[in-house]
Image 1: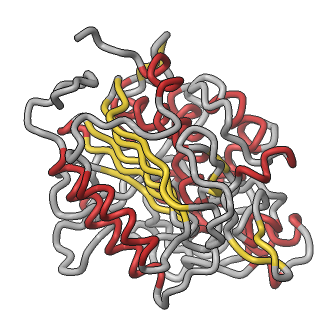
Image 2: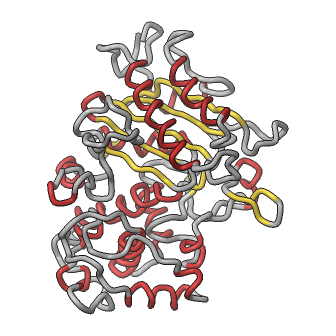
Length: 388
C-alpha cells in the first residue's frame, strides 16, 4: 500500500478513529476509559503514531462531567498543556537559539539575564536550567506574593539557590520561567511572539497558541471551576497568569493533531516535510543523557527504570525514550527505538471525582504506555496498513 502522508490522513480521521483491526487497540481504549470510569478526568484524546504516519486517534468522554457537554475530538479540542509548554514552546525556542549561535548551553545564565546574581548563581548555566540542576526551589507562589508581572519577576531573580549548582536534579518551574525570560532577552521580543513565529508556524501547528480566541472557548477543555462554572480558555497555572498568560513553564493551548506534528519532528531528528526545523546534531544534544541529571534531559524527562511505583512511561519503552507531563493532565512520550509516539491529553485538573487524582492518573498513564507498545506488532511499518 502506498505510504500516506499525515497531511492527507487528517481529513479522514473524524468522526470516529483510525482502527487497524477491531481489537488491536482494545487494551489502549480500556486504559483511557478506566480514567473516566474512576472519575479522574471527564474527557481525553489519544493519538499514536510514527515519524511519518498516524496510526490511531480517538476522543473519549466529554469536556465536563455533564454527558450533554461536547465530546472530545483529537483534531479540534483545545487543551491547556500546562507543563508541556516547557518542551513544546520554551525548550524548542532555546534549541533554535542554541543552533543559531545566539545562546550557549554552558554559558552562565547571568550572561543573558544580568539580574540573575547572588550567592553561587554565577555558576548556573543555561544547561542547568534545562536539566533542572540549577539548585533553585521547585515552586514559589509568585501569584500570592506579587501583584504584577514585574514584581513577580523581581521576586524570581531574588530567589536564592538551595543546593549547589549542578549537584542534583530537582524539577522546578522556576528554571523554565527563567528560560522564558532568557528567550525574551536574547530576541528582544515577547516569548509568545517569538515562539508562535519561529516554532508554531514552521511546524504548521496552526491551532497552538498562548492566547486562545474567545471563539474557541466552546471547544476548549475546562481545567477548573470558577464561581460554579467550568473555566476554559484561560491558563490554569496562576503563576503563568500573573506573568501575562505566556510564561516559560506554562500557558500554551493546543490540539492533539498539532502535537502530532511536534512529536514527529523530534522522531525525524529535526526534519520537516519541507526542510528542517533544526539539525539532527542539535536534537541529539538535547536528548543526551547526563548521569548527573538523573532522568532529566535538556527540557525533557525520561523513564526511571529503577522506580518500583508505576511511572507515566510504563515498563516497556526503550532506554532512549523521552517525554513530559502536565499538571492539567497532559502527556507526550516519544520512543525513537520503536519509531513511536503517544499524545495523551486529559483535563484531570477539572473537578476530579477521585482523591489523589495525580497518582491515579499516573497509573492510567503507565497502563496506557504498556498497552500502546503491546498493540503494535513487531515489524509493523511506518505506513498505515490494514493488517497492522
